[in-house]
Length: 242
Image (cartoon, rainbow, N blue to C red):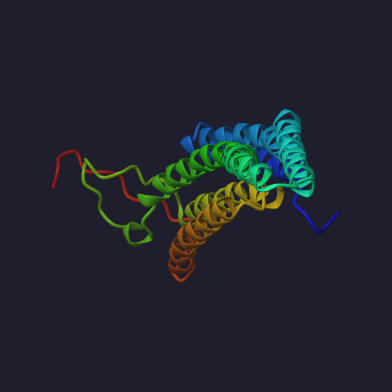
């Protein structure tokens, strides 16, 4: 049970994270983003079952085409073994030429069907991964204005709202980092179920993206932890733009 990701556990962890965000920051936009990730995780749980399930219609069609190819090859072999005269050989060569052309066409159709299932699953997985990547950027947008260098500094009237104490800011940034990591785990579910190299590479790119963003977040947390005091509110904005 510890050798693969469990979609149910990921959903459970995301739901718990949303509750924690709601309790610490009631009405925060990050909570709504987390709720969206929960919905995506639930969809992912269903999608990975669909993309990992064999498409029997395509596989049966492929087997039928392979059967036709084998039957044609056997038929040509039987005809070749019964050759007796040069006229028979001439006719047989014409038949072989037509048979080879037919084999090429049928073989091409078989290859198309063989790759169609993989391409269909890849397309569905990449669309889902694109959604997860978009959410990751939304999470990053929520932490961009959480600048530790502005703690205790005078704000202008147009400055972003920064009413959090250092402790609250650390918690908010930590929630962002957790949400990024859990979103990457949703993406990793596709790499577990599909061995397609394009899907695996895309999942790796998403994991690298979330890792880089989390590193930036933890740099902010490290700066805040080095500041004196942990419950000092920020000064209010002046009445006029400065």
